[in-house]
View 1 (tube, helix red, strand yellow):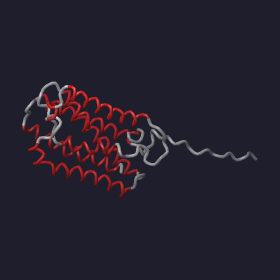
View 2 (cartoon, rainbow, N blue to C red; view 1 turned 180 degrees about the vertical axis):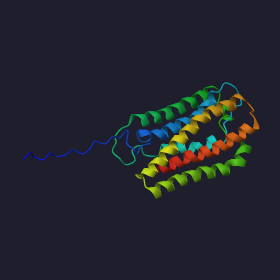
View 3 (cartoon, rainbow, N blue to C red; view 1 turned 120 degrees about the vertical axis):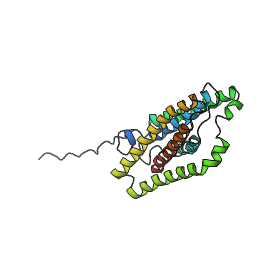
View 4 (cartoon, one colour; view 1 turned 45 degrees about the vertical axis):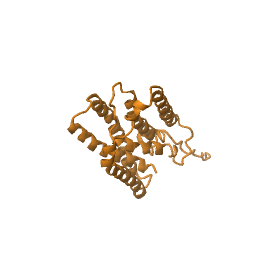
Length: 212
């Protein structure tokens, strides 16, 4: 009788694991979102003409960038060093330092207005944006608690949140270019952008909530 062969445990594919959106290493989607969120501020600094002021919703996405640096990139699993999340974090850090240095060298005063929210707009809309941010984050976390982190339904919901969030952030880059190019812009376009930002902040916050 042939001796029984001990079966080797299956090798875990830490890159294409279904636990990771898009099959990317843990932390990659958060890193991509952080790059896109900060990209709005980098664009405002490098925009060649004056009056390049960011809409209010972008400022409420900044806490998610900071939060992304506090989350683990391996979620408790021994996956070892992953290059893509490291490069994205490096890009966020070095890109922000480089842009800040450029603004200071060019005279920081002229960029202050671009990189601060409008006072009237903030007073009128900070509460709805804060509620959307907190509500989206809480909803994502509740979904994680109810469905379970390894539930196929939860993985599908989280994947869709990552897809929609990334697509909305990418589309808004084009919308922001349109807004900056039109200077004052049309009132209806501003209203549309405000509505768009409310949805975007909620979706992106919900994705980050699923990562807690």
